[in-house]
Length: 279
Length: 121
Image 1 (cartoon, each protein chain N blue to C red):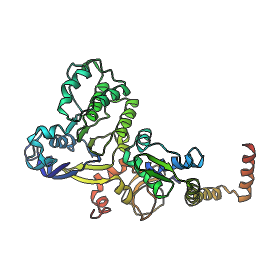
Image 2 (image 1 turned 45 degrees about the vertical axis):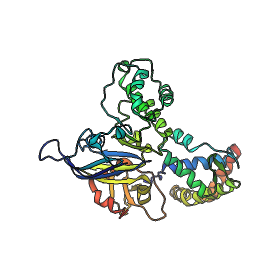
Image 3 (image 1 turned 90 degrees about the vertical axis):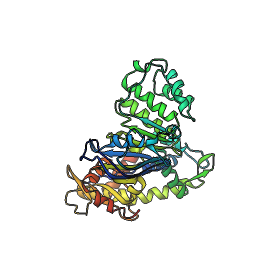
Image 4 (image 1 turned 60 degrees about the vertical axis):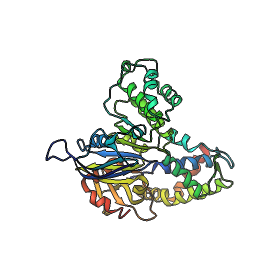
């Protein structure tokens, strides 16, 4: 779906943000894109959508360079930005205007989802709260049936019940023909929705694995003091350590501790990547 | 300090299914909720929910009828019982025995307590 090869980019001369970054995203997956503040997650999404151009290297969607912004590609792409402006129109009028850009747009889905999320589709979008507007855009994004969906911090600004609604809507959506990228810091909100973990750090993708491979190779355990097992990465907790340990063949799978994994990758990416060998 | 093990989400779904079968809420030939229903209920990626169905299909506890859905196998109850008994012996008992020793309980003491509780309920 998306192929980025050897991409380099800098906002300021001699301060490169990306250096020879390569990344492949496949249909059917929901990618979690993680990185520290300022790592360039949003900038990377902007390259994929063709809003920024690479200084070197290439970024392609379905084989076409993103920077060309062809109508064929744009009709298969939906971007849910973190910050957005919506016009003073009702949901009805907005979708009348924007839906024709997406050949498989599902109006029925949009309005049933808005109803489910308790977004008033008769009110002007500008009269809705930030959270309500965001929910409108999330519903619109899924209704577009675009094959590539980029979501930047989708749960920011959502209240607690809305976060749960968001997860339910994402879980109910058919992802077989879709590739979704979710960039987020809200690990706890979204970890169960993601099936591939991608980490951006120091201008490169330093880790990318499916959750299946991760729980196959790594074990996330809380080990008591005095347990001197070999650990790949560990953090002190009360009475012991929260640790990432190489999983034994045939050993029990544990739930991925995404926060611990992220910290481990940022600090010891080589050690953790080594566990995955040549894929 | 001893920590309990954390289970992956798909195993938690497997546990829920096994529970339904052990409590006889789901009986052979019953059609169970769809992958999508479970994904929505648990708020997880449908691929995660799918793993639970595949796991139980491999263990011959569920079977799939293409285009219709998943159903409970004829001898699912027996299979689940064997599976869960094995897990109980492997995972739960060592922890339990360790605590028992720490607290100085003997087996006969426990048997008495067990009988008492049985009579109460």
